[in-house]
Image (cartoon, rainbow, N blue to C red):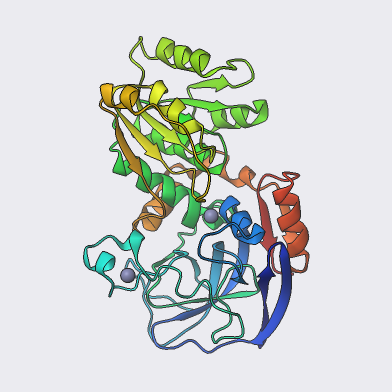
Length: 361
Ligand SMILES: [Zn+2]
Ligand SMILES: [Zn+2]
């Protein structure tokens, strides 16, 4: 194949497939073909035109790729030599190594994180996103070779939710025997339940959909709280306290994307609790909080977006060790050919499917 295709978002909810000659990779870069690319919730924000920085460009960030060609000798970010045919996962953002944040070692805050992502596909090397036949991985993107024992479906989601959750839970230093309450049983919530379980924590997952709670139990949740049964904040607060000997949770993880969840999280936590907030990523929505109540419990709040890029390697290690203990492969419930990318996006937005994946015909 010498020509490939990419999905171009030319305005809110409007995509078209565009064809380009495959680029020969520059020194240190990799041209890869897409094995599968998932439609993530944050992709839908971009598609709808809600993202604060990206309003057009090539779509797609979650993917499992196969190396087609390397620009000279290229090693992955763990030092493994890459060659054609290797499966890899790239971090979806760039780490320029030159900005103030990169200089401080805060690679997840790189000022140039989106430098390739938001480019027009007409601009070389064209394949800026993963909703396509191919993806061009630049030298300043972390990338890792995927061990052969990892399920392909699980590997395709490693560079988003799982890496994010591993990073976040490490930021709030979850330890064995602590209680972690997870607000929301979507992709991030399920991954958080599995990772917290493997750390040895006791987990409580809160959600309003019975099917999602059932899934949460498969991902390690020790207890679940159904919003339709515990239908007030007070009822949920009381239930969490009941499950934690009256103390409240040690750690809360907000992965709902619902602004009102923030104040509720403060109420589910006990004294000295740590609150990891990752679910609300689109500015413009407001929430009411009672700061006095939070301060009186001395709650430590950590808000985080993206991940230290080496977390992607930790995510692969996690899947190698524990991937078979949780139904990661079942998180994707619908496959679409690339030519049907519009339906994949629409069905995901309408919640007709939970997690769509695009495969190249
Ligand atoms: Zn994502
Ligand atoms: Zn940087």
